[in-house]
Length: 186
Image (cartoon, rainbow, N blue to C red; front, side):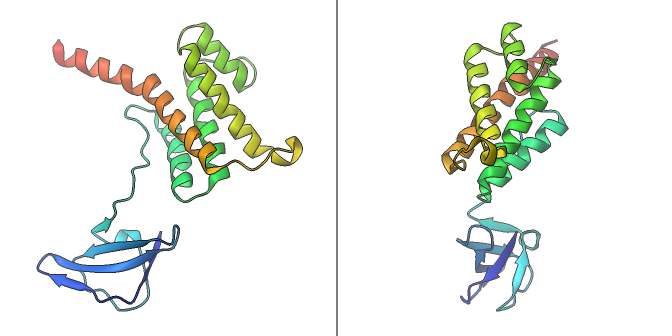
């Protein structure tokens, strides 16, 4: 992420410099705090600043999510944060497919894998229904031309990413928390 100086005066204090910038992704204003001197023009990368206000929302996957699945989720969430709607939908679907395969579902396409997890009670039917919705959002985003579907909306992407996060929490975080609690109790 790159930030462009907005031409405002920087504010210096014993803690550092606070300057006003414009984000190259969302084009909104941000304040950057740094211990280093800040030039009056130019551009800087996100890592240059000690703090950014408002703070960037976390894109981390729920705790205990396996790394390969967490990577897909991270890509979905950061795509959404950067308004790459189609990519967010596709990567949310990919994270779900990786998770259901990780839980042993192997039969057919993603729809059948979701049904398999519901049938063996790994997930509830309501979670299976939601997973199927995300699958469809991702499929529509991937195959817009051949399906004649409209491009996914920001709301589609938000729903897909939010559901994926809930599913990962259910599949990985809850069991991980229970196991951690049991280890502490014994």
